[in-house]
Length: 124
Image (cartoon, rainbow, N blue to C red; front, side):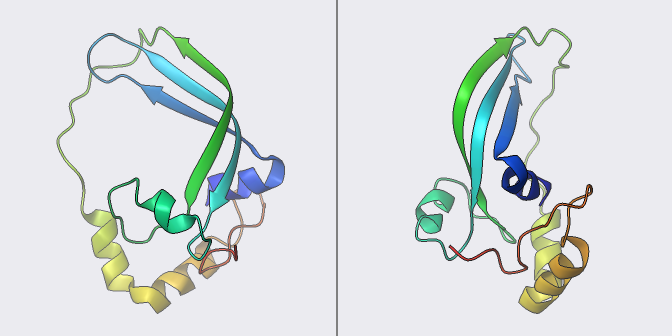
């Protein structure tokens, strides 16, 4: 929700990736982005590039304008242990109406007051 609100505000975004194993590296993609919501003709194709996930609000498309790397020497080593099922269980408990109500109550604005997406996602 915060990403969507800030993309709407000025379109700028940064994505940072850190190597958690192997050589220490950081990659930053800085540029412009846009949220693509369910109902947009592009959504299904974009969402299909990722593993299925319940409760998806949007797919964020990023057009990098600057790609930068840095050493990452301070990034700790970490090991992947597996996916969590917490979100999918929470979404199942809420149900479609509960999820919509939650988003309306909790995600109407960002933490700095920018407007959030409509509860069912914005129209295409």
